[in-house]
Amino acid sequence: MPILDTNWMLWDAANASEVVGWPKNSAYQRIAADAAEYKAAGIDRVLFAPATLGAAGEDSGGFDKKEDYIFDGTAFGSEAQCIAAVNAVHAQGMRAMGSTVLHQMGGWPNQEYKSAIFPKTPACFARVAGQTTYPGNVAPDSVPDPSGGWPDGDLCAYDQPNRYMWNGAIAAHLNQMKVLGFDDFIIDECKDLNADFLKAFIDAIRKEYPNAFFNGEYFDGNPYALAGFVNYWMGRRMSVLDFMFKFNVGTICNNNSQVWMGQLSDIGYCMQDSMKAVTFIEDHDTDTTEGEQTIWNKHLGYDIMCSFPGEPQIYYRDWSTDPNCYGMKAGINNGLWRWKNLAQGGFVTRNADYQTFVCERLGYGSAPGCVCFFNNNQFSEQTVTVQTRYPRNTRLHEFTGNAGYSADKWTDYWGCIAVTIPRNVNGCNSLVYGVYL
Image 1: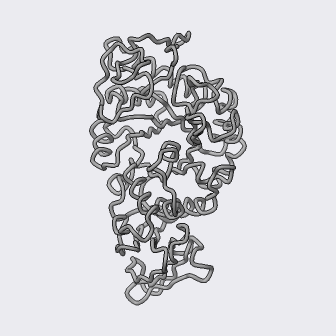
Image 2: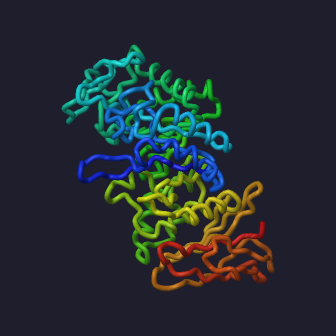
């Protein structure tokens, strides 16, 4: 189920702070107005920014959560507008996915957590080395990877004897789903969250919402770390953002003609556990972090993602034609169509060398599979001949449009096809062949 990540921010260098990419108080209204277009593009889940009130209010991206039960006063719009946007998403047959911050809260400058519902005291927060404004007076929770946590707020402490924060967080999110209508959640900063709490959190929500989908931000490019979190720590209760895929594909895109394309055979966690990997090329964090952005040939990245296993997540700023966005809508929509209608089932590498890579998806259900060709050479086209699973004289249609209208191929006596892949010009050079639908 492809996800559209509508949570995008820009870095305001003058004020040294994050600001919302959407014009203030407009995000929910635009989501409601554009929901039909998202559906037509092939989106099944719409990911919202955090809906709870942040410490910076209308100047907040939402990750400095201050209140758990207040949905007005945010940068994205009002509670009523959020509900209307969720309803519009549901009306198109899509699911609404909330972003939730469990790791930290931002009550600065005075740690103001005295709201009427679910108030907090210093006993609700842990001591964090290096912070000067934290209220915490309890020991930090045991977590999967304490070295991976970030002291970017007042660190919530869940695994305490009274279970106040544990039970309160569950109740607050059940309320959020009831009031706003969210179906699913992405959970921020999973490395530094107590695993027993997180499992109980998911189990409690699924008791009332059995089909709820959870995705975790476990910031690690090591596939063993991602597998450990999914299988050992979470008992396969949730998926993870595939940072291994994101950073490896980003390296290919940012270094055309200079990176070995054969690495695509094992490019991400998606190649090991496609059912629990959410692949992505960019999100609001990496887009605003120097050294993590995919800057060049981003179309190539999306073509790879839409040809590979895993559940693809599309970054709104890449997709949209809004001001300050990158306008890649047409190519991404084509890729999502191919992912849904062709690129399913088993994965076989057909050609892997320094400049080119060819893989075949073997098909699953109504998706018949396809053969995908990638060329990272910016200077010249590349011709490759590859084996396919199709019998001789099978007509294969090219579905990206990058090879021109008359680009259909017929398999030879041995079931092979010879294809000339265009040179890499801004990443718009991939080819995908499959049977006519």
